[in-house]
Length: 422
Image 1 (cartoon, rainbow, N blue to C red):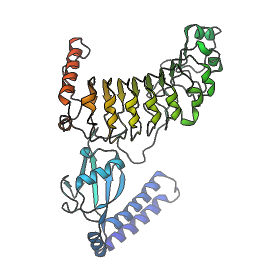
Image 2: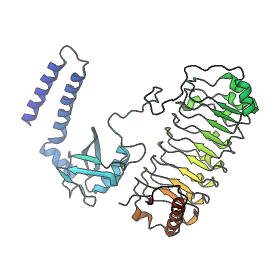
Image 3: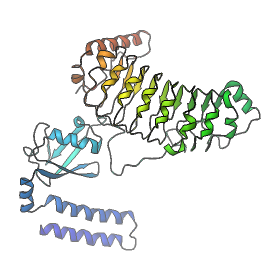
Image 4: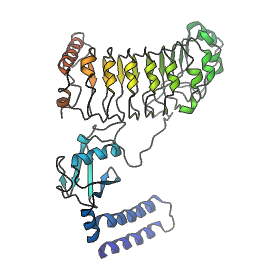
């Protein structure tokens, strides 16, 4: 213990020397971080005999899991299995249990063994290694992970090929919009929807303001009472920016796209858009879908991938027209049994979720389902083949693949099983 105290004093002295003259430098910060880490090591790695005895006799033990620069404290019953520990780590790291490799004292821990059998005692430090791709949501939770705002520079993913610094006002533009019904204002560096858009009134059929910086969708949008398609992708729009009272009045709206924004919730007013056939809300920060989504009985395409959705409401089963659903890269651990009511469903994307099972009715009742993506979930091919109705589903998807080969829709004869092999 004495040698650890000496090491700590030495680190403090070194840190003071490094920080002398400039306490704000990166080198100074790193030096003091090392001091703090050594203190933590002393408190965890070198407990006295009494602490060890207390840990042995208590129901829970406290351990630390090192992962990607993070130290994750865990309190868990000492009789827990390694598999149970992995399940405990899943929401803390976003890494699926079968993608986790836990290492203690240089040895790989076995799922079936308990912590006690693995000699993992109170105060132990484990290392977690993650297999690439086997994660839920947007990826493993890393140290000091931050949400990066959408950049408007040339180097961004959404680089504009024909960006304009200002809109050239054409005399006949408003007339052209009224004649064609199409208002095309994507990639125009807009901060607000121009007032002349509202002058189009019932003449407007399509409004495209993708990839701008629109921060307000006002109630005034209700004057476009015949609009059928509304595109608002890539604007950084937050919940507060949308006046849903005006948006919900668009009774003829069939396509609504809010992809790549900052939405955290969809309000109950969404259920008023009863003509909606396509809803695109991918790449936002949504944590759930509203119950009122069940009112969208004409909805055919739902794309809500790359969000933070943890549950899907049972009323999804009332969206009887759904053909394609994409819920990949979320935080789902289960799906409602009512998913089996989607008799028109043909395509279902569920990759990169924490799913361990599927509704038992899925293959039995969704008889048009031919595309299913379960890669990077806990459902492997061995599990998938045990579901009732699997054989008929497998025959349908193989038939579809063969037709795609015959018509040269796909160039490779390799067949995607739809789930990982192990």
